[in-house]
Length: 338
Image (cartoon, rainbow, N blue to C red; front, side, top):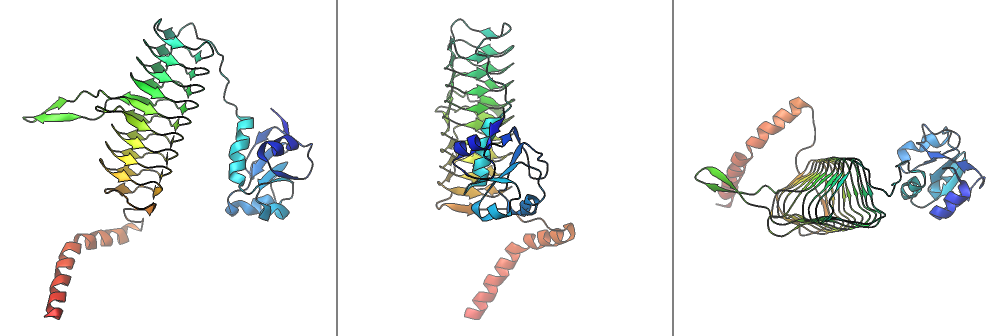
């Protein structure tokens, strides 16, 4: 897997300072890198490690090039450079292009000859596996679902019926796509199930983290746009729509029929209640609860910042008094006006 520094520079479009013939066989942090490894500096908090790193070369911004004591690849965005070069050293096993003898593939399924199906996987009736699709061991692709070209479903993914996943997607282990949305009507105190007859539509180049759940639509489809990135353990309820290139960190929960625009970001643990509309470019900070729609792009937060428990208790006590204080302020204002 070794690459010369010149090969890597050409791949990244970077400027080389140092020996172009250096061989790089792996990636590592500035702190742990050894000879033969490539590192990067994206966060200036680690700038001092440039002086002590044992890396053979480092990807750096032009402003830090003079501080690098080893060979350097100079880029305006070192973190993006690291992201791209990671593909050259990816250790993910390659697809075999075959169907494992223990897999159960319906005679009514349409499986491209170049697709890979792992051990104990199940491909149900009328499912479609496009060119180069990779289905991991123990994964199920349900009735009438479609897996796009070059898409990889890792081990033990559950894809229900009538789900469409686009091209070049990645779905990690434990994800469940197409499960029933939480739909019930009440009759005399008892719950009557609403059949979820919609599906799930997932665009191209989407990544879905481990143990995510994406519910099918009640009548129309749940929709995940192109380039969306979902971290682990995220819940997407029925009929949610997520615009292209939106990203969510771990633990987000999106209630039913909410629409999230293009290029939004939701940090870890964000909750969004149902039937809202978050405009393009909405950015929500960690552990916030979104209770109303946004009409302008920008950053939004809720909740209170962490403080010592004794201080938090005082603040919580005062918070309970706000309504009474507001009434008293109105009375004082009225008295002054009178």
